[in-house]
Length: 313
Image 1 (cartoon, helix red, strand yellow):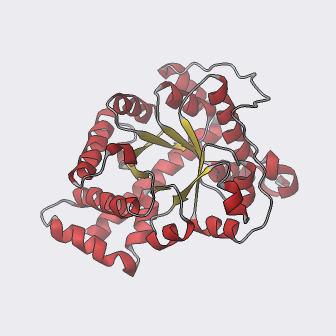
Image 2 (image 1 turned 90 degrees about the vertical axis):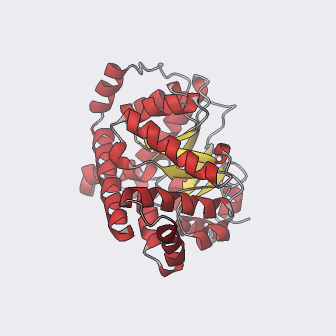
């Protein structure tokens, strides 16, 4: 078997794209989208009719309202391709507003419901800020399932687990990027990559923490830079992977050995973290990498949302 087929024995593979054709090629269980991926997709001629159809169906809608309809239109198409779930992201500009995030999530679910889609097939993506996590707690209590994104630290993961979020998406590649930049010329792939990769180890630590404390939230590694990072996380609950890296895995014969085992954990030494607001904010603040990458990620998604709105106008 190729490396992708081997990986699928241990981990649920998710396509991280808004490109329908690429999605069909790799037959993933689920799919994830974000503002950047949708922005990239709507600029392709292949999706011009989809966007035009949304605009014609909602001629009086504002740019923000059109964006919601476009996100759902992409989600509807994706659900015809994957047998599982699609993740649809709430406007990143609401990342620090709990009540507005809840309202937007309910609105997106309602748009899907109008098209006959059961909410069990939808994951609402929220930034793992304190406000986003509190929104997830309320939404999960209502039966709306959440995918917590822009997650870079154990304290974020612990708080998401406490909120009973359905799924978290720790960002492997962006963590690695930060450490590579910090080390500069002192970064050596042979020493700092592979099993020593800081992004990979962050996900492994979160996975062990969840299993140690019986947290049911699923762990889905995200934001990969190479197939080595992916292979090191074989056995993680889910991995969301770009089409480029899915293609690399499909073309690869590198053996894939399960690295994460829920039933055979060697490190059960973690201390349960205090996830109350003050403690959460202090621990996140004290993690320079997580603080910087969370802020950077929100800024980037906000910029792409504004570009998307301009295109829709």
